[in-house]
Length: 407
Image (cartoon, rainbow, N blue to C red; front, side, top):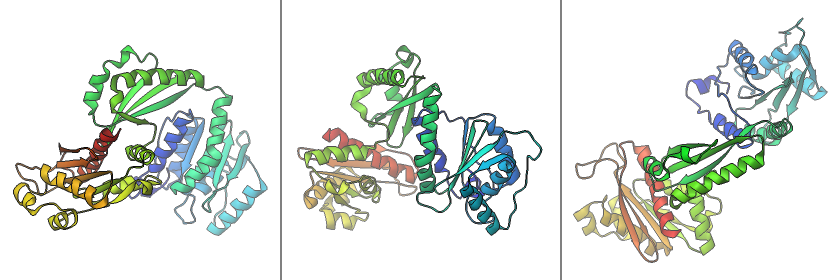
């Protein structure tokens, strides 16, 4: 990634994660992520270093029209002396440099280098095309820093090139399969699986916890796709035998989408009432395409008055037990189910922090209730002191409770 704005923290480099994910899924091996300032000398030094270590170098950022966008002139200068280019490229480069008031110098003039092939990669949704340079079998691709534009160029042009190269050269690669779990802590999951060296063989296994659960990533390496898949399925079956009751899916699916698929198939619906999460759970549900067919909607009864007025929580319950209590959570979920007519209803009420805690209800105390056709389940959780993390973990725990009820 190229740009001062990334180095100083104004922009988070999500491009690197996306690129690494799709490259790895296609059998490529990512060896380094690097962020470079808007500085020509640093960019050239970085390109020189990485060209000696990799077969393909992917750059994002610095292709815009302002003075601090240096990627195009630096690469033009870097390769200009030996470029074999199309007429389209020369017109584009000439017009662009003229607009910027720049000229291209021959950085490597006099050196005996093989010709560099250069071509433009059309941008399906933006104005700045990608640039591809190929010298001595080392490919350098420069793409816009705007995520959607970069992703379009990667999908349309770069990934077909990488997949073809991997297949043609029969490169030994690592393929991954990820199992997604909910409702079990990382340490408990490790205990349930036991010593993985007893069954892994040449494969690898990594535990990747987040606020919504633990991912188990299996890796199998080899030149044959058939052998890799066979090994992945072998290890997957063993893990499912040991901890399958916690596994809700594979790959990049979400718990919300899995729940939505089950509800849609059964013709059932869901509604929510969120106090401390303030609509976060509803946002996760509506991130799923087609959720309108099973998600009725949600309340955000933040104030006690709203809990009473909108969802029928008894004033006596609030006075006797407080807003953060088993009784209030239960009345919220059942009231939501009754008001909306949904098949299932989830309620969340808690002390998100950083203030508001008491000795008997410290910050991080959360009650979650799921009301279904046959029963209501209400559980207490104790999360940490970070407000954002508490909200994330609360929404994740609520989805886990619903999944266990409906599966």
